[in-house]
Length: 203
Image (spheres, rainbow, N blue to C red):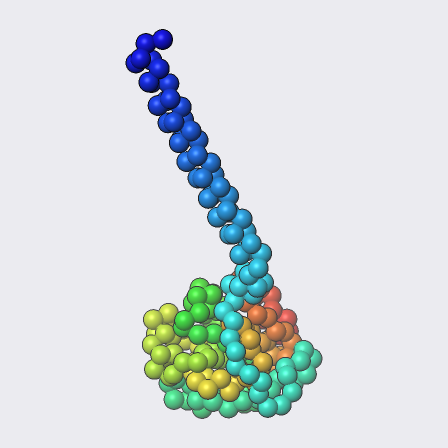
């Protein structure tokens, strides 16, 4: 064997070993990333998977909202200065929706809420949007940017949200014409879900 050939063999071997180690490390790194990503997805709360922003507002006075029972009354001032109370809408179906401008899922479903409201308002349906942990100026600006026409309330101190035991937003409470709570849903709703629930409480 010539010196050139002898010298070339170890060099090629070292290259192959180096490449093999690099390939192995890359495979291990990718595998580890996939395993960690899978573990993260499994560990995430179900609410997060459903596009819900968790909130902590405590528990308000009075009983927790219960299907088939009267919805808890509240009085508030909308961001455009009008005083409203839930009890004043007796005889009309009311959809109370809790959200916030910083909640991605709330922003995403807002146009559908508006479209559904436009569809049902002739039947006397009222939508009251309660924005938690925000001031009136922020909520007013948010509503203008999204073109929302239903009443909006800034629940700055979480008083209404606490009364309704809201622990994630968006959250929806559907109240029939007699003031009875008929449905509670946490998480963004599809237009079909909004439509079906309003049909139930407007009959």
